[in-house]
Length: 391
Image (tube, rainbow, N blue to C red; front, side, top):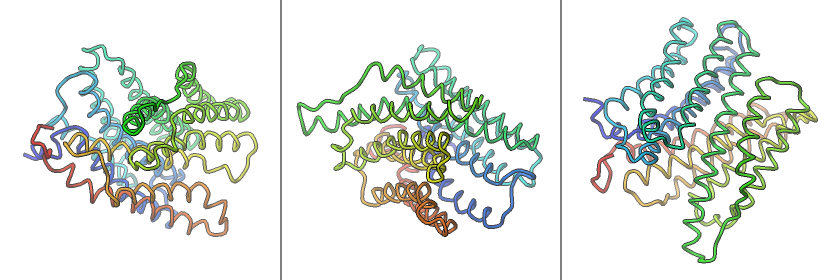
């Protein structure tokens, strides 16, 4: 039975593995689609397919892996594994297959297959969260909001409405950034404190209660305004405000003290793209500056993908009984992804006459980063725990 394979012994295993595998395949495919000047969706820009698969393929897989490993810890319940995880994985893979075959797949079939996954994930993780009245019950609302954004995207495809589809994707990205804000605000200070206190007994982080209350509210305001789109000025100034709030928050976490620990500095690097991305977004909306126009890729590669790689490499080690330390290949993967983010955001500005070459270089950095991850972590995720424990 396939579902008895160690890959399906715990919820994070298949989703982190297929997240990495999908990442290293989908960008080369996207570059080929772009070169051919075709679109998987008739009458709509090909970029919509690319953005959808980055958010609802790649990012959702990683979020699922994180939740399937986190919920048992939050609720003190038995972990998810076996047939339920196998079935959930097949549902995610079916959605990716449907979008890969989008030009040949009828829209009702595409929608039915794609929209099945998140309700199944909610159905799996909701009972222990609700039963234990856990504070993370808001995660269920986040997943429901992502499902609604996916449904709105498909409605835009059905209507050949690029505006609706684009707004749905922007909403989904903002929801993921909200999730990153919440989760990052928990794990970065905790991991940083635990690691650095071992070298300095007097070490402490600076945290501001008012900021921890205000920042999630401001992120929700970003979601609402980007849906309503009242005008560039209001959205631009809100983005600048959010950039400042994230920068103040990050400044209290002593990022420079983490430079000797790759598993720490990569988390801080990922979070640093939040203030940078919102600053670029604000400038692009307020001033229309060409050099700030690639802010969405700063979020997508710099913040979201880098945080995914950081969390996946750490979680997979801890949950398979291995020491929390990465070797040089994974450090190289971190650096390659950082290079890809920098090239995708800044490259078109620095080398405007070489845009295709810049895209190719950024795509190569991304692909190599996730190739390394898949090669190194495939055996870790596909084999039993080294300590003999279940999971």
